[in-house]
Image 1 (tube, rainbow, N blue to C red):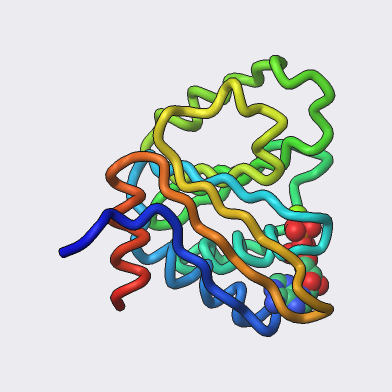
Image 2: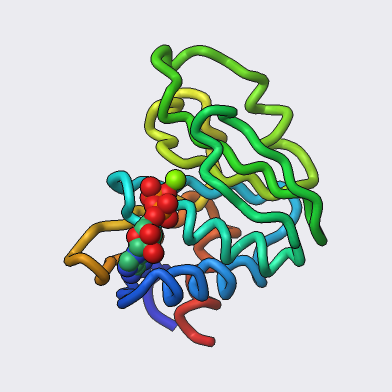
Length: 156
Ligand code: ADP
Ligand code: MG
């Protein structure tokens, strides 16, 4: 069929819907998957990550790791949840590659701050505030695996 998907735009109308979207995406994640999350404070980046954690059967409460930068959770796959908002030097390397090229799933909030250190292939996720409760979630795949993932999400 037609052209490869270069982005997938979805609307959510509540935090719960955004969490469910994370859950739905999480069901298709694989070892070594890297996701970036961009969006204003309160957009729903951590809410989305909670859904991913649920899909990996992680029972711990996922909180924004702003002050710790990296939090690890154990589930069906390990989940590495990063929030690099507080990194003031975008070239500061906290050993990111050990996470990106691991057997786990890595989610990076505010990933633009470490743009130079991101792997070649990842799923870029941008969350836009349309109103108090409405968000647009835009998925942009970088690499073939993530194109497929977007197609599956679109078609299921
Ligand atoms: P971030 O990590 O981007 O700073 P959080 O996920 O911590 O944002 O917080 C998002 C807040 O917005 C939560 O309190 C959530 O309940 C609320 N909210 C309302 N509508 C939505 C929506 N459609 N999607 C995500 N969060 C929403
Ligand atoms: Mg957050």
